[in-house]
Image 1 (cartoon, rainbow, N blue to C red):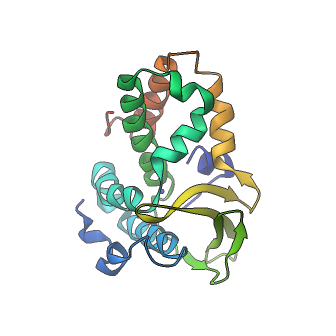
Image 2 (cartoon, rainbow, N blue to C red):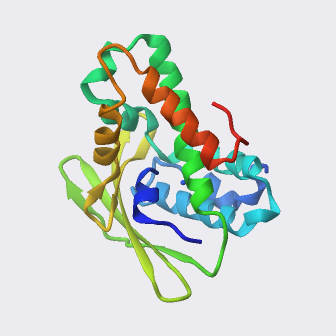
Length: 209
């Protein structure tokens, strides 16, 4: 499994592939719980690998992403001040294709297993009202990728609101910069088309938004 920093930032069959205990965890508990659920889902998808189709792995990971991420908030922050000016129909379309993009990015980049082990620090740090959870993915070679998750609470409990690669690089900030060039006042057509193309490329045409 190879995950470049840039690809990861541009970013996690039936749900039987995922351990039931992972799906059973709720975001209402500790702020580390959603990260644990996501890590378990990613490892399961990696182990499934090429034995299952992209669509099957997408369908496996989709409910986990829906459970642990605050996708609506992430998208609104990534779009920034343009969001309120978009027609409702474009907002809804953008939400749907953004969700597919996030899931497809994870499936495309966590596609094989070679002994990776995920770990989560039990200690979190406070940043205003948010909590930052530190996680790492270690390979059998000894290489390790550190990923910090910014956790916030909504009516459903703790949710992932941002990802900090190597503890500093904000995925939401990178997305906001990337999205800005594709947005104009009241029009998200270019951004929607760009995300749809990325989903198609990542999935080799298996997923259409």
